[in-house]
Image (cartoon, rainbow, N blue to C red; front, side):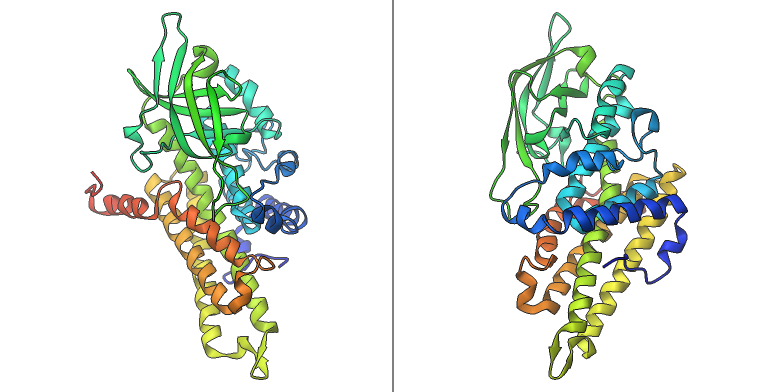
Length: 389
């Protein structure tokens, strides 16, 4: 599996920097992630020792400016990086997505110069980890219903109370971007996780994203300084929703990496597994499965690439990101399921990556906007009617 699946000359559409990014990420994944990830997933451990090496390679916040220690990549380069990381495991891509798109991006887009100068270089280097607190126990697809509140005190500080749920990186984070309702609308706060009243509970017993840290955030009279904490350049839900758009874009690429790993595993297995005196790849039904898998993977690659080119020209829309996220996660999940059937009983073993990817993709199918919600976003775009209100 030295190269990504490339049925339609996909790589010929990339520039030299994008090709180098992909190759660098693939080498890292092959050397550092694939040999260990089954053990970490089986034991529900996150490979935290990889965070700083990822920072040193420029994998964290890679499409943000170089002045903050970031790589300054194109959005296509960022997408290719997500593709390769998720080929290793969704946990590593999720970590990088949250760090870059959900924490570093809002600091860059909405933060003060002091906040950017303090946090972005540390996070780019992997010296500080962030998490994003939007989803609550009772509010996922409807973030406007959030109950977490921030009240302004007479001395100008703020006090926050509430709970956030399903938070990636929560229990290993140094800073949390927490969105809270205020008398002036929804506002974003940077909260150091050692602030009194801030605590986390790591969620165990997951059957999906087992190598990822998922946590509950609890805020009990958390008092923060306005200048250090509040993101000054945004009010309302457009702030967190714009962050989710960035993350969804990365997911549209990342899911294809998991799909590619499943497809290539099934292809290699079918060529070596002999039944009835010939490899199972020689049977029509298995070829049908392979043909359908590589077709859907190829379509997903071209969709993600076109979206990336539009994003690099700032000519894209959130609804287009919804299409790519919705389509590519669905086809990745389908490819994982089909690949599992080709491996038979071996498909459930940790020796092969397929069941791990399939379980991970069940979460990816739901988070950062469920499949159904993205379907309705596209529906609203083409009809002009919002069916979810």
